[in-house]
Image (tube, rainbow, N blue to C red):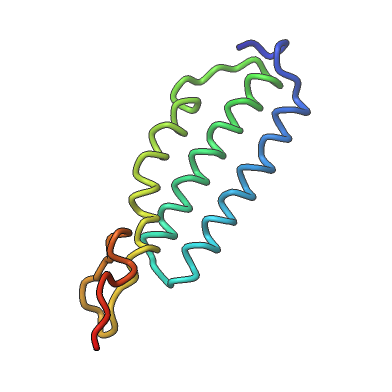
Length: 112
């Protein structure tokens, strides 16, 4: 990609969905007060900001930094596993989380 193929206005506009997604993941993680979820939100946001900065550098200054372009793909794989802490909130008293598999979310039998 060269700076002539990608306008600066579009590169600046790429920051909007990145910041909104990071804010949304941060809010989702803070619902359960789970710190790993917030780490996942920061990883997603940092990778997206790195990619947006790379696009801005290419569009505005014709500077290509491949490591900045690839930062999104390095930070996104661990992010969902950090954010999955939202599904398994810690038990009262700080014990390890007890996760219910989706197929066992509804009891199969009822006690009489």
